[in-house]
Figure (cartoon, rainbow, N blue to C red):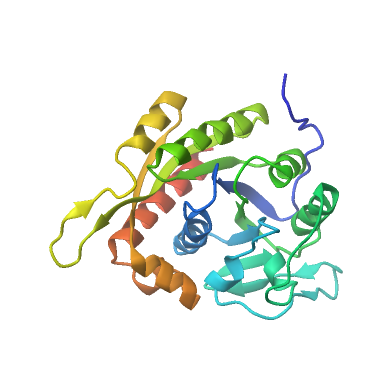
Length: 265
């Protein structure tokens, strides 16, 4: 028996597919990966939106260099999302003054997620990415109850602790009948620019082994690259600013795998 009831899901107007980008724990680079994945998919000609579902810790606006408040769309009465780098974006970070905390219990979170899904003027999109907060809490339950999520992508690092949390996330999506596209291992290794030596700082091989044990596709590695963080701070995703970087190439390959999944679904 499913732990979460899913019969109340309703289609999001204008959106063909939805992709949940998830991690079992924080600090694995999930939001940065989601931002770059969105831009990489848009570079393939897809119409892409990004919903920042991390209500307590919204980081997506900064990664896209966005500021200002969304307005109400005149004809529809819905929230008009902002756009940058070819991506339509909505986030709690666009509705708050900088540094303002969100101190809400579960029902308020659920209400805001519903607003972001169904009261935003998304327009016609091929794919809406949902950048989930870490873990398996209220936001995840709300999304899997409300939205027809077409697939879920699990982000981890090679760390043994992070990989243990992967198992919980995978089980959550299986219980809620959300298809798993696969697992990607972020921050897999650091490659020295001067000597070329690659060092597996957080461990080695754990992502592939975990994917095999959990019987989900392994979608490869993204290296640890300080330039990724610098570009996020600058508000311009690395796949756009430095497409030839090793990390960008890995992210572009991931975008190809994700695109192929939805093309064949």
